[in-house]
Image 1 (cartoon, helix red, strand yellow):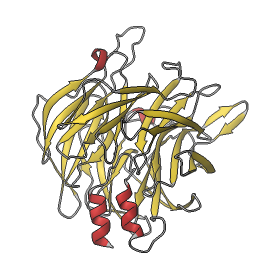
Image 2 (cartoon, rainbow, N blue to C red; image 1 turned 30 degrees about the vertical axis):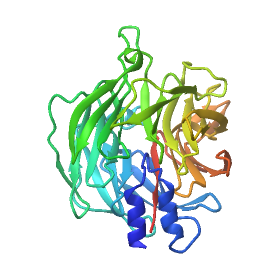
Image 3 (cartoon, helix red, strand yellow; image 1 turned 120 degrees about the vertical axis):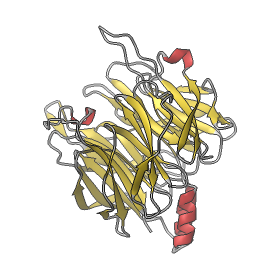
Image 4 (cartoon, rainbow, N blue to C red; image 1 turned 90 degrees about the vertical axis):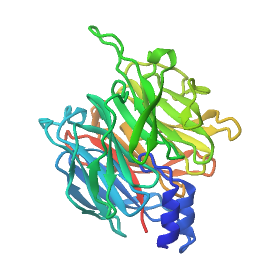
Length: 412
């Protein structure tokens, strides 16, 4: 099983740990049935492990570990059973938590994932420059890439042969990291990197900071500026997260404040200067809306559907997963469902390798009409037509700490 699974993982597409059909195929060739997976959820500095029954779309809590700071994001390696967790003791994840942010310790901890999904710290945590807002890796699993929001930046770190985190790879000081990086991804060809920079909304005292997609040439950990993509000079372009189609040259990008899903063509190690399609993620078709923002995006492993999380304030906002069908000839997405997440602020979600289960992390505990809705994991069955069927909600006793990240890891 090691060889076929390893090959499948080598060609996986991972965003927030969503993966492509070849992984499921590797599992099914080695025993049949749905692939075994573990689900992880972070509550402040605690990272909780759940086993998942994909057939029944259920979770069972197994164990938890404590990180040196609040978990920000994590990434599973395609080269072996390792999970790399980025954490910080400062930044936006501490807001309203009741825990005072210090902001002097930021790092990446490597964990070996065993056959049950349990995590085992592996090597010494690697110190990084500031609060990491996103972490990913290249297609070979030989390097980690970290995005920083304040100040906006990117770093690349070697992964040693034994899976531990190695040294930071020096980069040119002229790299264009834009304003408020929020996401970083390596193109499926492994020869280019997209740094998604969100910019900032205007305030009563400041002008709007433009958003942009910063594309870099990527060569064994080295980055070189290629192009900055900023439709309308980046104004009204609050780009947040990007994911790629598993077999076609299309990139799907969420615009946070505009509540839209943009599609960009991929060609010659870069993206088109303008989106080829731009679709609203809300059921009513509106765009900018007070208290309403889009978050992450994942393409279904079969490439037929793409999912976007909508986050709304209590008392009228929409908290749901927008489901789009993808035209396989043009890449055009068509909205077919908005599935209520049964909670508030769905910041992250993930899809299992077989494409049959979706797990949402509803970030905040919220009081509505005298009732408290806890932060929770909401589990959905994915139907054959790509739409979602809610199965169960797992409430988490988090106090004032946020359920900041959730992800899914395929198991051997």
